[in-house]
Image 1 (cartoon, helix red, strand yellow):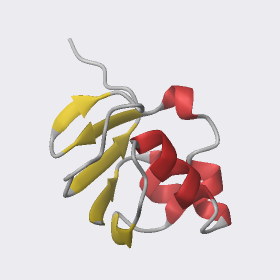
Image 2 (cartoon, one colour):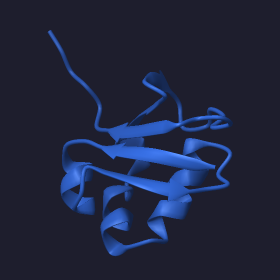
Image 3 (cartoon, rainbow, N blue to C red):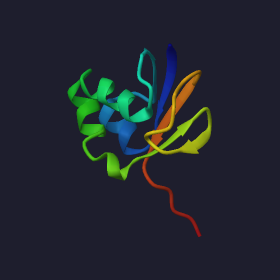
Image 4 (tube, helix red, strand yellow):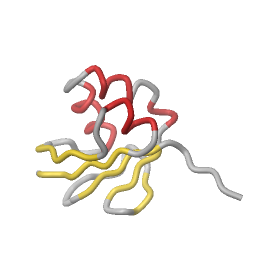
Length: 83
């Protein structure tokens, strides 16, 4: 499947671009991360600590083990704070 991946904050800085389109067979965001880490040192640096990541699939917050079947967009970003 083809998925648009969006990167925010320090992930974007480490990878070097805000988005990319990839072909993947990954079943979950966690599996997608494993594929991305193999692409470049920037991806490996960005995903070095996945405990410090949040994920949204088709603009819905989800965990890294959620299914990706039929997803069009996956976004990765650091934890959000608010007040």
